[in-house]
Image (cartoon, rainbow, N blue to C red; front, side):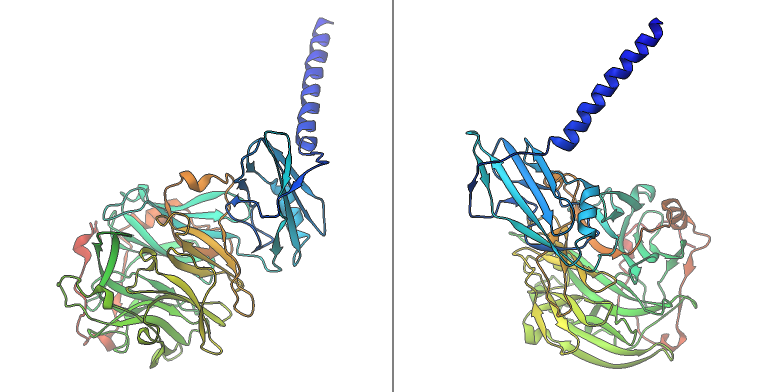
Length: 525
């Protein structure tokens, strides 16, 4: 009998606790504001998510209200669905993910609205101007792949390539250098936004090379031949999935006395094509030679043109980089027949002489309509140049324009969503030091809309996270290849593929001296 009374008491206590918890969750956010003063200005929030275009499948845009107060009340509402109400004594606004997803999915093509109220110490409520988000009809790719790395000079430590679910806040490791003897890993490149086919470069650690993954199977490739005696750098997949265009680059770092003191110079670079099935490297004298620097290859979506950046070689090998500001790259392309593997004629699409700027990192939208690229005062490493901005070229008219999404700091690496309606790009606009991923909706006319920062569960995340987001790449689904299998392939020296040189180009003279002594090569076979 006593035991039954004990259980009844415990049950009653638990029930009361659950009732209180239920009340706090569902009713505490309901604030009855009968009187308030209108401020006639937008509230300051961080990150700035005011008046942007967002996809319906993005995670909640949690933010901080940058206004002093003792209580905060936010109401989010739309044409369709229930209103979301959030009340907090702190300025941190966390939006319930379930209700957020429901609101966005039921309001495609519509706007959602935000009303923000702040109560001051005198118990007076202030209402700020309403702002809105336009919900696009088109989703963004579900995942973002990037490399996280601390700002570095010559030495590196703790480098990882990660993937983030854009529909929530979950992040997972694709590959980390703690399993690779702290070697450098970089330049992850995906085939048509697919997580099943990609490459990752390795430097030092268990041995320099390229990890080539197709359908969750990974092999390590040594792309060096007697002609290209340095490993691949920047890579682009051909649409037929049978070839990779890549550059080899001899780059060195130097320093300025003031401002962004780090800089990079390319002493020599050429373009090659790696044919996967035959494990063969080939090139053409039109994209290979001592007179010019060729870099940043990018295949057109139809596979009939190879776009790239090229500059005349103005620095004598081994000299001091006194003429670094004179290195400015043109935007070029060359025709290519994938059936016969023959090259067409070179075309200069936009010259540095015309723009008085250096053109780098061309990326064409998957539908073939637009090309986004960087332009800076000089050089080919835009992430280190505050003058670097994003431009868009209409491939129907060949006209180009500076996008209105730029800032006073560096805008650099960018990639397209599979549906050609979204771009992600690296920007240092927050502090001038660290690059963070920003997204922008690009409509069918090529207009890029106000960008927004990658949302985090904690809106204060970026104030304490001191790593740069390098090379953001949108992918449709998560990478399924296991970290263990990638690491195993990196160490497997018995099955490394040593590329062969195309006999048709064997007579070419090597143009670039190997820079591999700068890296610990490890064992290769």
